[in-house]
Length: 163
Image (cartoon, rainbow, N blue to C red):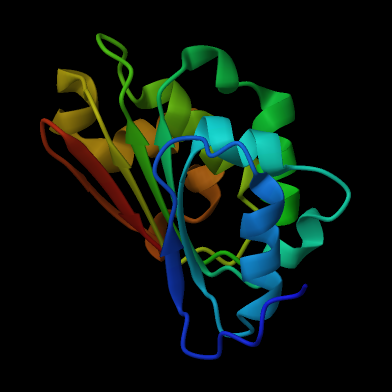
């Protein structure tokens, strides 16, 4: 039996990896104004399949990353293709003793053709990144072509970019 319309549902947060992913898809289908999804990387990767276009209206995406093996070009490309309208991304690394730089570079590369407004990455940062985040981005990404079109800042636990 299909769910009735959930017109007031604007965001949903999934904690962990529920075994019945089809229920989340039913909720997303029943919620025409859903624009924010908070989810673990592991669960998100389980949901990616042929019907993933139902997530295309998500504008705010928050992903908790708990496993380094989930961070590869193939997975990030799939996420990028599915969340084609995302404007704000929050990535939270729960991986101990691993700096966020590789996560940052992977997502910047795969989301470069999106109309991002902001990206926040939480986790362990390095002194080099904290010292001059703007120059760090210019030296390592396509940002050298858009120098005046972004702002960035970084502290011990969080890196932020605004476009």
